[in-house]
Amino acid sequence: MELRNKQIEIPEEPKSNPFENDLLHREQYAQVLTSILNNYSKGFVLAIDNEWGTGKTTFVKMWMGYLKRRSYETIYFNAWENDFQDGVIIAILSELEKIKGDSGKLFANVLKKVLPLLKNTGVELFKHAMGKITGDKTVEVIAEGLGEYSIASLQKGLDDFEDKKKSIKEFREVLTEFVQSIDNDKPIVFVIDELDRCRPNYAVEVLEKMKHLFSVEGVVFVLSIDKVQLGHAIRGVYGSENINSDEYLRRFIDLEYSLPKPDVKDYTLFLTKHFGLHEYYGNGERQKHREFENDIDALIFMLDLIQHPYSPTLRQLEKVLGLFSIVVKSIKFNQYANPMCVIYIILLKIIDKNENYKKLVNRKLSLQELLDTTLSMLPIQDENKRSYFIWFQAEIVFFYWKYLHEIDKSSILYEGEPNDESFEITVDGKADSEYNSLKSSIGGLLSDHHLRRRINLLSHIIPHIELTKVVN
Image 1 (cartoon, one colour):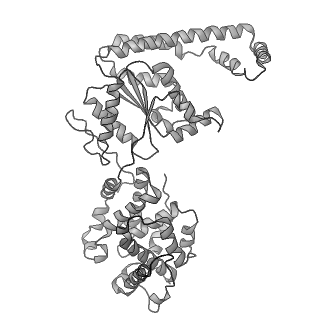
Image 2: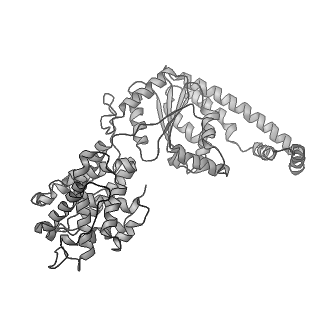
Image 3: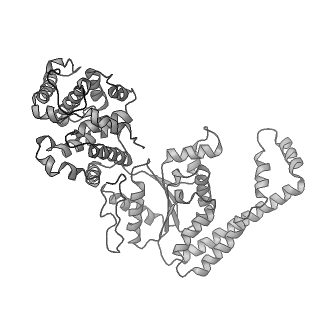
């Protein structure tokens, strides 16, 4: 059993569709972005801004395949995988080298012109001195800088600064010539991914080098980012929470685009298959017992139900289902775990902020409190789902009741345990018919001798959930 979902396979054959295995129907967005490339082929910087775990990396890789089939030169640069080194310029050039084709001599000229930009010169000294000039005391600060560094040192810094400006200009000129030598009327598409996961100083350096050195006509940079996380990095580098990271990023980004939130039902179905849950619930032994008949449908129902209140990312869904898979496959067959209840308890642990999970684990949560958490955490928006939801409420209350009253860890209820008359609960603000439906469902569980003997959920699954943690 795998704990991590495999990357979706992207076909590489020239005639295949890179979106062939796309579960989120995002080819339409690739078409939109490609039309933008066609209209602004001279070059710009595009940011695809979505939070972590929304499938940006998969999308940009599929889009790159889509572009290649339309004769675009594309480059993929994973900034996070390269931030172990300090040489941003070298890292970017190493990617450009892959498309040099017959322009080897021109690329050699690019490397020649970049050499002066890699040397440590007195420019840092100059930047330090000039950085001290602020406020109304400019003259005094300049005097202080001259005293500290000497006139000769400052002059050397000025000379080096001018030399560097000239080197930058010459580098951009030969880089433009190199890009134009690529026999194509389309721009080079240079994707920079995972920038928001880098060391803060490396992320900022990539942005600045991209803008000042590599942003030339004929190159479109695509930044696959989470602006919120990247903003934290920017503020960290500049040492102030007062830095307006949005304003800072506008210096580098010409156009922003966000992938619309997908319908996750298809992705959820894919994950249940990936983690082997269809096989698990379709096991021959389980198929003999009617309580397993609708379990996979119940699981998908529950995952669909949490979309409105929590809007989990694709990555979070993967983590939750991975944990769920571990839990249900780690318990014995006669310790059957209702999927809706397991998912709910996982959510209670990682989402609820009122520490109801701890109270549940320690048998300190009342039946009424448990019922109230289901109503507050999972508000029903679709009336067509209400009957299924009432059944879920009945099962979680029933299983918790068993957890409260069990004497040992066996899966058989002993004679004399409380019956349905022990349930003193109300459904606040709901119609009598709904309350009666809930009571009736609980009563049905209590009277089902087969279920009473087989199901003993919480005492078996809680230790598994306790030992695991879902990481966003």
